[in-house]
Image (spheres, each protein chain N blue to C red):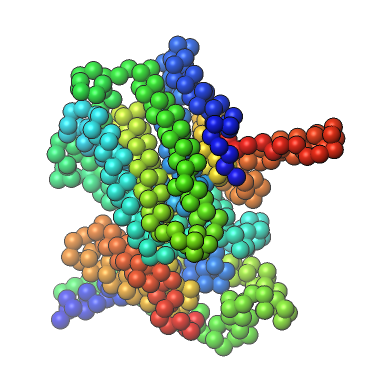
Length: 346
Length: 288
């Protein structure tokens, strides 16, 4: 079902879109718009972590926020201690990835079923949330960084030019860096999905037993995917921390995990582009609805989630694609009497 | 000697607490293989009903023991008819939908009551054992946990409703061909599980007060108890509750409540690594 990348118009469209926004965006937007769009970019990186492991490996994590938060705290603590942000950024990927590998080992080698896995990942997030909430006292400090409990960590450093700790990036440059990361990540994930590794992941997603009988080590494969997803989520957490220059335990909240799920579901499980569009659309929507102060944000999110599960279980992009494909087939049948080509994956 | 009794009572209380919290979830999971992710919010709803009706003049015991289970039970039946019933057999989808429900309920209650904590004072005074004081309410909780488990066991074991329930649990298709309306059994089960959860929420209210996001604090403990217990309702809940309650309370005595929670999770993770189907997946398999 995966077409070759070279002949996939969706892939080239998304890559081109990313590059155009990267170079031209800051020329046209004012500061507020740049800040707003940077937020969408960071959250898109976050949603890709779940869209990848869920859509292309069948691993449903209810606790992506655990890795997101772990990355955010890792970055903040390391950046405050080191005074620069390049190496902390690497750590924000590495430490959640290692933690993800350890947790994944427990879950996949323990052969936990989907339900159990969902609950375990969620509980891990909750435990993080509880532990970090209890670190308000001055004795909870790592080096120069006080964890601050429910007050969070203020004054997380802004990104700086690698090697020059005094050269801070302005919001436009930060947007460009993040957009570059997002575009690169999208391209790399698409290449990974099209590779042999990716084909095996999808084989496992479709039928775990069959993949195992064909001689693939399902457990190891899933641990690698899970750790990779954890690392990406952690990196997004680091980006979030430096974007806001502030973090508090809410990065570990259930809402944060739920958002990743909702965006992925809304965009379409099994696509990478769909969830990104869903981030932009739904975040914009909840911003506008939130401004009206009528409906509570959780209320909206929950409602969307239930409606999606009941009515659009496949998600936006696949539903749209199937609709277009059906129209095309009908059109080409009417014209020539033979079914036409079906639209490729995005 | 007195201190030993206190420690023993505290551990018993921790176990009963887990059993009461998890019972509603275990009923639904054991019968329907559906995990109700909105469990914490059902607790919260029970708590709100208790406190609101008590403030309106209803005696505390009535609002706690009658109104909270009744209203939450009816609410559960409505939810089952509207959402859950479309999702049987789609475990992941039912998880996602109930999670959506949980967010919806948090948001809804926040809109109605605001984001503040409300409470009532704990009933029953305290009992002195030697130099120590034990809150009477703790002893009540232990009693209720025992009564709850006894009641579920008696119903399942000795009534025809229990027989039908067990048949549906073991093999829904077979039960259906034998004339059991399994969809009604599911509806009743969900309602019953919700009612038990409502009661738990009511019992919780005087201890912690109520706030829209309070469910989060208890949901982890309940899930972990049910999951490590495995598919059998009574044996699973009891064995997991005993094991995890003892561990977490032991660690709490040694270090403090935060690490108690963490120890509970860690113990559960290790246990699941060894027994992926939960305790009753391997041991006590034939029990209820």
